[in-house]
Image (cartoon, rainbow, N blue to C red; front, side):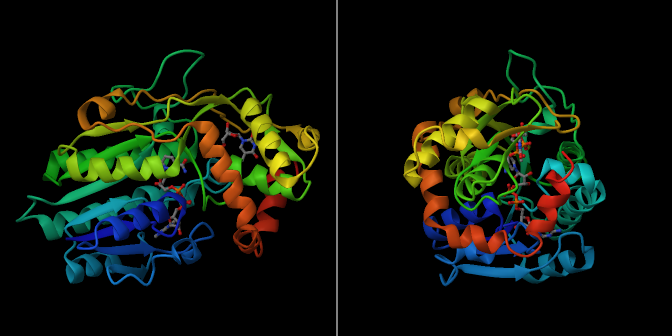
Length: 349
Ligand code: NAD
Ligand code: TYD
């Protein structure tokens, strides 16, 4: 079994690669990654010497390269995670999201279609997507697999578009696809542009904690290893053409989550309780900011028996510990262009 994992040097991808190379020594795992600002081979240094792990440097927007790679390696499966993934960057640079998330996905679909056209059996194209394609909820209700797509950010619009292409390739060409839409992930190796690692890093440096708007937006947080476990299960047991929602039933209003983060991090840094809450700074809201995401994952629980393994309190402790014990990792990824990014993103808010 030869599986291509795209975006394996990123946050979620590195957890999926680690799970697959260690749990399935008989599989050959190919990690294809462009190593953008979000991709970091350090994320995999504990497993990159394993004989079944292979790294391929490359760009999914390069159709000739993708075609040749598939022809050469004849993959049996694809788990596609490579993407531009940050909503704020999609607001300032939408075209990059169209190129990687839409065009890149179509290039992979074309290559899979071409090498599998005579033998689609036991092949699988797994597209990893987000709950953000469903748009926003009000105070109540949940996203199910039947919820109509209604994306509001360039990021979610590009992911929605890629989901549509994946389904179209299934219905039109018979490509054996499967899709999952997951809620917000947190845990080790997440780039500190996203809320949780950004705030832990800022607390560490006594920098302001920029809360968008009034801090009332709600996200449904899932520990990243539980997402990787769901991907493993769906990849192996999900029926062809299906969609599964993945989520933690763990909704937090941003401001409440931020206060928990301040408390846990202060305690671990030996600072008096309340120290970091003083860093909370309300800033201009994100344009098109979705109010609430919440996933109904009962289909995945009923059909495939998945459920999250970690309680949030435990997950957040583990996460804060990881960032504080891996300050070298944080320092590495926040050197270079990070300061420029930070200034551009937060300078005028
Ligand atoms: P990430 O930004 O941490 O990692 C993305 C990876 O893709 C990086 O390693 C990057 O180098 C690589 N990449 C980007 N452009 C590429 C290109 N053109 N060619 C090859 N590689 C490229 O993202 P993440 O948070 O790990 O998300 C992974 C996937 O999961 C994405 O598809 C995202 O939409 C989806 N998702 C993320 C979340 C979340 O909370 N982070 C939730 C649900 C779904
Ligand atoms: P983020 O981690 O960017 O994930 P997403 O936008 O994909 O849900 O943001 C999570 C929530 O935190 C979202 O409501 C926006 C908010 N947020 C802030 O208030 N301040 C920040 O600096 C960031 C990055 C996010």
